[in-house]
Length: 151
Image (tube, rainbow, N blue to C red; front, top):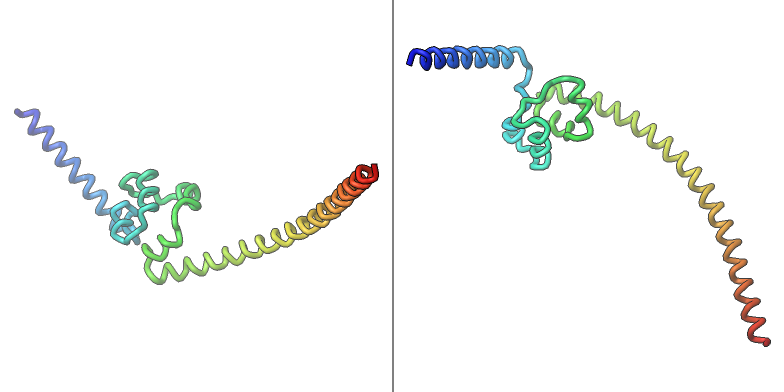
């Protein structure tokens, strides 16, 4: 009986310590931890909730550059910024996002222009080769017809 009481006290003490630690973390954080519960409360779509649960369970997400870099193409970060940040931080996020998008657009436009040049040249070569082959095909057909028709 004494062992059960000591074990219960240890669990309660341990539980209180964990609770106090969580409270300290919450007080020092600007935003609440990103958890499945938080995302549900903000009406995240089901596919994103499923992804979250697959990778992080109930959460919270470790707030590290490594994690966010790894999952940058997996999660809807723009949605998260819009729904989880205050308006001041969201405005700052949008400035950086818009700048990054402008840079991406420059690279994309330049790469597409190069692609188009190569494709235009390749298509012109294709047309030239195909036209030559088609011309040869038509000659063979015409001469075969003539030979057989005259015979």
